[in-house]
Amino acid sequence: MQNKKPLISNRIGLILLILLLAFSIRLGLLLVSDDFHGVSNGRIIRAQLILNHDLPGDKWYSPVHPPLHLLFLMGGIKVFNYPVVVPRLISLIFGTLLLLPFYYCVKFLFDEQIAVFSILAAALYSEHIVYSVIATSETCFHFFLFLSLFLLLSFSKKKSSKYLLSSALCLGAACLCRYEGLLFIPLFSFSLREDLKHCALFITAALIAPAIWMFINFTHSGDPLQFINTNDFTVPLQFGWIRAQGEALGIFKKAMFWPKSLIDNLGAGVFIFGIGGIVYSLVRRERMFMSLLFCFLLFVFIFRTMEEKLYVQERYAITLGLLLIPYSVFSISKAIESFGKHNMKVSGIVTLLLIASMIPSLGQRVLAAPLYAPLFAKQAAAYMCENIKEGDNIILDHCGDEKYREPIKVLSGINPKQFVSMPYLVPKDGQWRADKELFFKVLDAAKVNVLVYSPKGDLQDILELEKRDNPVMVENFKFSLLYSGKPYFVYNVEKVNNVR
Image 1 (cartoon, one colour):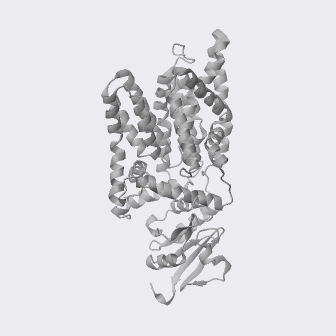
Image 2 (image 1 turned 90 degrees about the horizontal axis):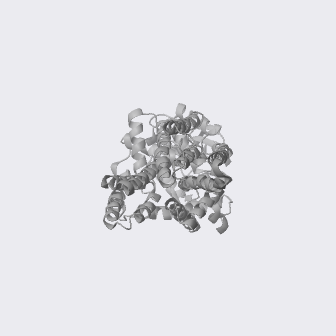
Image 3 (image 1 turned 30 degrees about the vertical axis):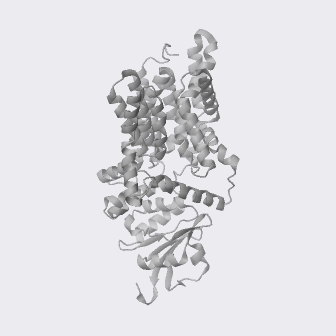
């Protein structure tokens, strides 16, 4: 297809139009939704604590998430000081800009027409749209990943070391956005296997940023791979929590989770044609680079999920979806080639119909995503905003799902330092459970005087406040009900005899 005339000759205008479409869809969704994602709001809170100097320097380090996305959040909040919106705009900007390096990668590996249709499909990719308005690290990761790939492809054509070094540094940045970026260092390096000097240069430069992060891990924990080992400890606990909710997670369900996620979020048509295009490229041994990336990444995802070392989050599959989209368009083109001299028009129409089949998935995913704060959460946050004083120290329990806690904190507008973060949960029977003795030590040590409690949360087993008359005495602490808005209850906490 390399020498075929593009379906629409005004290439630059068309690309800009698709960029505008992608930006408009994402901005429109941002304006009518909330970011009610627990991870994203947890990062927003952490960024605020650091900026307000309420988090000691030795507490900045956290191995759970790489640091670059947090630095973006800190920069945005520092400049505009609007933590509810600015972090979402950062995701939106990276999510829109991704289409440019994505276009040039597909154009290089396929052709211009497939590239245009591919960015149109990416503009309508439901999971990518959702996480372009949620303040997690996916969109900045994909921007740096595909920018790295574009620069690497440019090096293969122009043989200039500046492209190679820029590619490696961008890949290092991607690794500091999401840890799966590390998988791409050997994968990208493999394309340089016949040029050992440049291959070594690429690996060395790509590892600079991850090596700095490993050194920080070693400095704080004595383990340079603490970020991976922490994941391998916490993810099995997350699987245990899912099972505790009554959901079965057998071998088949874990093995099929990622293919099912792609079908749900891309649409069955794009998935089927995409897999067909990948099989075709592997059999014919052409346009294999992205297909090998897809196959390897899918294998790692399935294998790690079977081990219960990779959590079942559909957003992780966005990378797989972006790699699959061009092969879906490619397979349509190959299937229509037999139509003769009018195959370009037929191919274009069929491809547009295929892309249109993604729209129902978009509607379903937007409704299912954590984009709408429930009324009880807004009411609880509003009560806290209006009634909790600046000097109050607060413990906020979850209400049956961890994802509600951090968004409510951000929605309340309360200074994050007022929320006590001293731990009172311990791993038990494969789950995190509240330890009664530890909890009351935290109440005393942190001088907690407000408890936001839920009968569905971690504290139900050790307090059972909803089953007792108001006020409630437990372990020399008096809990007086201030607000009731199921599933949340707000209590004033006071230690008897004025012992603090």
